[in-house]
Length: 79
Figure 1 (tube, rainbow, N blue to C red):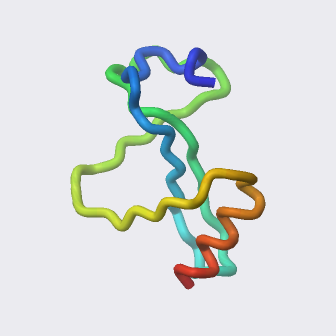
Figure 2: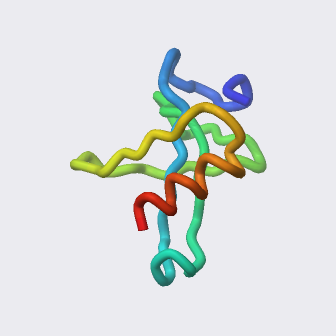
């Protein structure tokens, strides 16, 4: 998928960002998956951008494997 992201920064990690929470563990939210990009002026149709302000963030890393198993397990540990 990285080949579809113009100006993606080489060797940047794939990010999964959960944002726009409605109501805790059972509420709606937005999930973005992507890469750091050096320029976001020419975004292909079907893709979107967001800017993550500089700051200190909690970072949670899962085991490698099926997303449908590992992400819920990580959420259970957090909540």
